[in-house]
Image (cartoon, rainbow, N blue to C red; front, side):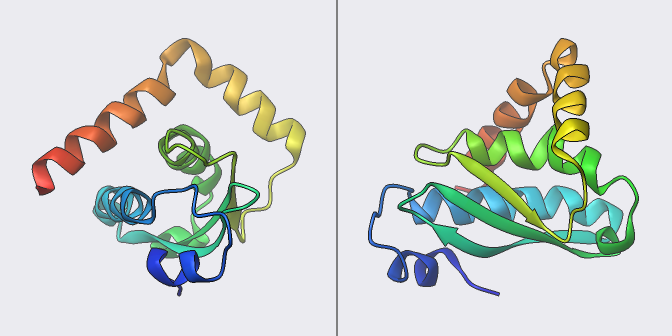
Length: 126
């Protein structure tokens, strides 16, 4: 596992705030812990704006990982300035299925909810 500070050292751009990234991943992981799982940073390509994370614990074998990734993880991480793409290691879902989930989730404003939840979680931590 790589932490955000180590990831920053491996990338020339420094456009993604490593502290905010680490806080957001920690907040998401705390929420996922309710299901005996977690989330961790695998890689950060700051120049390209790509963040790669992976699920841990019981989430590794959960068939609802894709729903959690699309409804909570991806929107929360994409809300961080400089993040252009979020990859989830070990998640096998077609681009078509991912687009379908995003379209189906749109009426429920999950992206805005995920972002508000992460903002609130960061405020509580401070």
